Amino acid sequence: MIKAHSVGVGDLLRSSAAWRTLKNKWPEAKLHLLFLTKQQGYATEDLMKHHHLLASAHFIAIKSGSPHELGAKNIALKQVLDAAKTVCTEVKPDLIIDFEASGLRTSVVTHTCAKASGARAVGIASFLGRSFFYDKVAPPVVDYARGHGLALPMDYTERDYVALAALGLRREGQAIELQLQPEGVQAKEKLKKHLAEHRKENRPTSHVQQGLHESGLASKELLMGLNIGCGTPDALHKRPNLDVLADALGRIHAQTPFTLVLTGAAFERDINQAFIAAYARQWGDTNHLIDWSGQVSISGLTGVIDAIDFFISTDSGPYHMAVAQHTPTLVLFTYPEVTSYHDVPWCVRLVAPYDAADIVTEFRRLQDKHATANDR
Image (cartoon, rainbow, N blue to C red; front, side, top):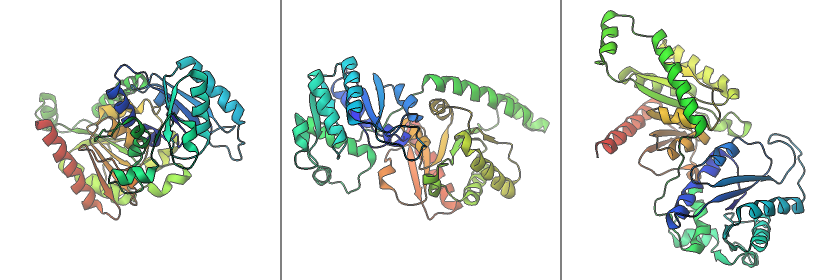
């Protein structure tokens, strides 16, 4: 399976629905991902190399340098093709699918690998002459959307099904998938120990409260996750108003006590601390807030997400991870972004403009949906 569009966590994870569809069709098939990345070193690589639907994942750089280096030069096409052929020699594919809807680079790589391995090739006939590179072709994206009654732009999960149309495969409501990974198991245990110590240090002060907690008669306290994230310069506009968010979570906590784990990369600690400061200004006590930024890798985050009851997030990689792990998720958008939506029962979304009351309302709706699903 060849891709090259974006190596972002959410962008690539949304391909997992198509992978599941392929596995449903051919249960014994081994799926190998070949990704042409601008530069190597993205955290997504490790996450995909351990994805439960993939037999292997390979990342070939088309530019020199690191992901954040400016002015990187293109790597010679011959070098890229040689690296791709090496991968195909290892995995010996029977079928190669080019999921990219446009461009010539992946078409050339697909054709070269198919010729070297004797595999059949599938791709999208997005412009005149592109079909030459493939044995079976799917219609252009516009024709696919029209034929399926979909508006453009489509959500990113649906886009991979354009190529699969050449094989007669349809999405049929398939959601994205992600399972707890080895680093996640360790991270979950690490979080469990931290929570035990945190709650011991912040146990109820009154004898009555202590007795209730020790006897198990106190209401179950929720464990919630919050990802503000969006710490890279191109994503800052996706962050919500911290005062509104703090107001909403304080209202929720007043009725439904919880411990809140703030996730994020190490460089996102500042935004987490800014949120905690905003919460303190409005509600005082912040003992139930835990800043977990920089504590785990992206693969380790699967363990944190697996441990929590509900997840609140911006439009970011962890949001897509939570949805893929079937964790009840409330996602906050600062503007409409249909390509990032997930229409699944365990996710609700709120698009700006909204206020604290709106967040509370949508969170309660998520709770109700989750409770109803558990009652079935």
